[in-house]
Amino acid sequence: MKLSELSGKEIVDVKRAERLGMLGQTDLEINANTGEIQALLIPTGKWFGFRKQQGEEIRVPWKHIKKIGSDMIIIDMNDEGTV
Image (tube, rainbow, N blue to C red; front, side, top):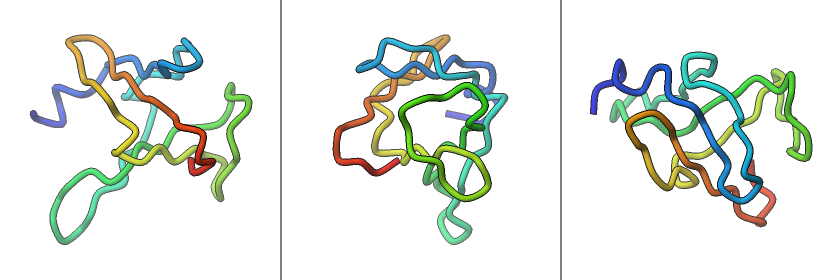
């Protein structure tokens, strides 16, 4: 999948049944050695219940992404407390 194909997709947390934002409004953390996406970095402006990380953004590790569909990305934030 190309990066351009990800842009504009809604990010939805399946446990909270909430729309969290659009991928175009987020940043990606990319491994410089492999080129793989490590995490989504989402601005915290309208988020509640998650721990804030430095820089006022939420880090969603790639392992929490469960499905990438035609118009949305489903994430499953587990209860391990790492965001």
